[in-house]
Length: 437
Image 1 (tube, rainbow, N blue to C red):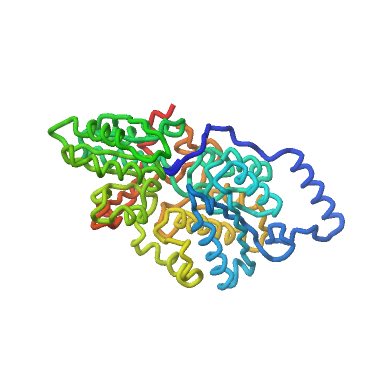
Image 2 (spheres, rainbow, N blue to C red):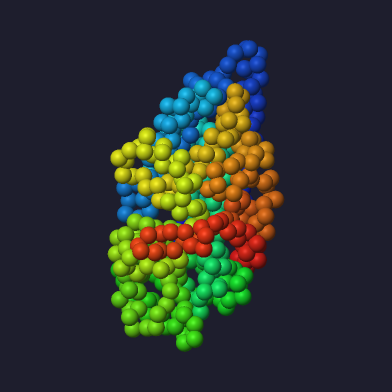
């Protein structure tokens, strides 16, 4: 549920761990007790056979689409940092990485490998194929901590512990921000099932500000130019001569292509503003499009976290400098890198809570479900996941979404900077009133 290309998601009922697995586990415990000896799982190992905690981070790498190689790279840097500091309660952290190849088969293979390796959690990962990877994880009871927020299952599965609000919060927050500043709003979005989810989210924010609904404009994905769509969006956004309109492209990786066409067409129309969400544009895209002289100058962008220049990112940057200096896969301004950092912050808090007890997928999940409250240094609100079905957004089909905070950013002099004070805005109430049916 971000601006990147999304999978074909439906709201699926969470799966539960098979009864057979529970029976086998119980039998194994009885056998261990009768022998008064360990049976392969040393307390704190996650089944690794030594005093090491194993987790996995996956993301697509080496593809032509949604490469997110900074996420596994920063996960490995985090582990090196933790281990250099003496580990967690004396235990080493081992990060396994996997490339899902940006396809369903690859995602399922990564999940099965996580099960085979007996990891205690999948942490800070990105994959568009939740319907492929959640089934193996749920069958094995492995928690999924801090995924990027790109699939519906991340906000519905009982084994998912998201740290951001996905595209739902970004679009609702953007609509809320634009309601007071824009005349007619034109939303340019994919002509797809996933794209159909976007107008109600943007309109929930616009409606909260007593603004009319956006003009819903469908566009194909992965085409070479968007001249016709740019002209249509400009006509709609300039339909009121007394109010400056706004164009909101939400085409994921194709947003840059749209903006290239938009830049050529805009001189034939009255002035309009542009706005979008993180994932459809980031600093690297702004730089590549011409920076201050490019089409994004003056655009509003909603994100999940404070801007990259915020001092709250200092601990992450210090770890990157110390443990991954020169690794050009890691961009501290990338939302995937930032999400992975926060996800590992959650994992660290959970393992500290467990202390000297046994670390396993079951104990990690039980600790996350215990009502634990996790601070992230102000990068998010305090995180805590409710019992199944009790989340504030359960009624709109997002029971696991616990962080609906967004930040409003603006492109000034070619740089993404904080807008309107740079604080976090909670859009939970806006989403509760969204018509997502």
